[in-house]
Image 1 (cartoon, rainbow, N blue to C red):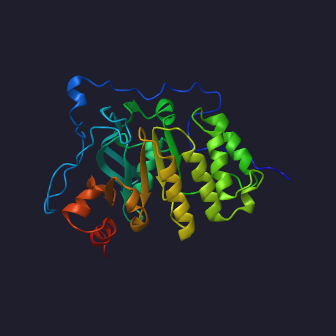
Image 2 (cartoon, helix red, strand yellow):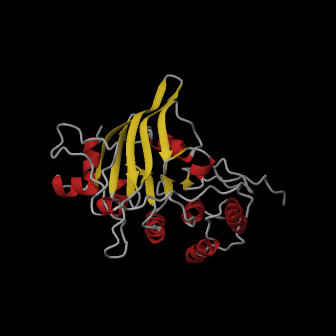
Image 3 (cartoon, rainbow, N blue to C red):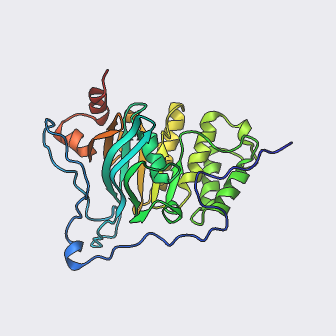
Length: 303
């Protein structure tokens, strides 16, 4: 069988590239250890929405040992981030800060700029203006070594075996955990010798998610991970995200299927026509407004 050229995952790094240093740590001081770290750049809740405040940020890493209060470093910082395609503004002056230890839903209808934002953070597209930093690093080879990106569409050649996909990730990413990947694949019932062409669309998407989540990254970018798959596949995908989530990392997950994912979210960002309209904890909606995030989303974006 003729094999198609082996395509690398979406990144500017190439095999053999010297890995970037690990994410810089921020040491705790006596004052900072007892005080929450404000989310610089957080967008205030728009006027007209009850309880208008800036989004709060936690002061300790979830799951830390009791008494080990450690301030969270800004993991993602965007300031006036803009992306244009000709006369179309796909993203318009997006400003946001996300700390470590959060699962954040990037919510909006199709065409709202979700995929554009994730591509900019992953470094596979370039902003027209504004600034973007990952763990204090400008987007480049060093920042990409901290980011694990799941694009909306599969990118592996259909002629490749699953084991070849695992080998590619092992060669390409120093933080890839191959034993973890094989364990999750076994749970899926996917043979490492299976060709991508023999797998269903849903199974192939789950395999790609396994590879992305088997990295020990600082920031996970998941573009519509539950779109286009059946409810059973959605359950596996959400369980995989929860099981592999690490308290020092953060996940930015885009979707318009809010009901399926709201139970795992800490915060959410609403995007409309490329502009952010709200960045808040899920508790703002469930506790302050007394409704579900899904109901709130449907009301905000009803036709």
